[in-house]
Length: 521
Image (cartoon, rainbow, N blue to C red; front, side, top):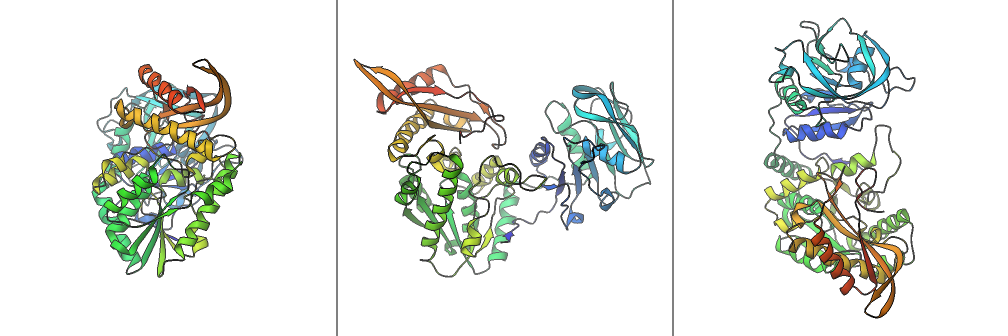
């Protein structure tokens, strides 16, 4: 089912992904420069690529000399648009356009010092001649194609950067053997800025205000006099998406907020109240029994997600049948959902199923509208603030689509959900009390399928363990555990154990993402 590609951007950089772990970082850096960019698989250049300002070729775990190397026909765009090849992108350029690439005896990985041989080049304007850069490659460029010339070296390699010679290509073509997108390349952000601004001609006009204006206008044009149905979760993503649609079409948007019995304590009532205050045409549905009856005794995490997804569709369809004239389905899908669900090779190994990528449109036979599909989480928040949405909704921590079903490890039961709700409520309340809630990215309590011996008063207990998870992140793609004060952890632990009968032990999770995920299931 087709979706609306919301927001017709005035300027755009295309990033062709060859499978690098750093590809998303390139996108992040360009977004920080207020330049809109999109990631496409290396073999899926969009038909409208000529309307873009430039193309960036990412790195890759492959070697251009491998039999299974990822190949893109560079002749399609070389000389037509400004190009920047990074690492594998540079090697592919040299290899495909008549140069010589060879394997090195040892992989070059780590910091290097850049020596710029052509200081007047616009790519290096304002860049120090001994700038620290980050290398990560196993191949080296021994000979450049005849249409290119070297413009920088390092102590380890003779060709650290090169460009197309004057009068050889109709559009500038640059390549870097290092990674400007990582923070270890100290002036990497400035190099990227020089490419997108000075060479590709971008102005950095992509701001929350411009995004809102373009998105609202696009929705008006596409939807026309039609009606939109949207399920809300209470999270920032669906809230911002619904606000954009509501701003475009008003009460022709009908929102449905389901209580699946897996929300935080008292969340259904409080969020429903907030939505009504925002002027949404909203329907609140108590569907807790529908979900909890199906989940009773289920312990496999992927099975939990599939049950929740199926029941959500069933309940949502039931509510949708009560409405007439609906042509469109709104969803709060964001860019990390899309990135994690699709790789450069097509569907990749499933880490977890995303509940909000696909599904409902096919069953409801509605056209899909995803206003924030191209935004990272921090960008969603900035757009929400620009829309005037209350800060308590915008600053709410992310909450998993399957809710507490994946924070109760092992078999699901109503009593375990209650224990998790009670522990989580105390945890979140204390984070706010200690002025920590808005200083971390996400926090939640996880009920473990572990019972242990405890002593309360003169009585022996044999009760559950709860793990506290708290991380700092920008967009959820990576995360580090939050260094919470011991005083706070002591207070939270005591409050949970003393007030939640059934829990006698509290532990704190100090894992990063990767290798762990933010949620435990």
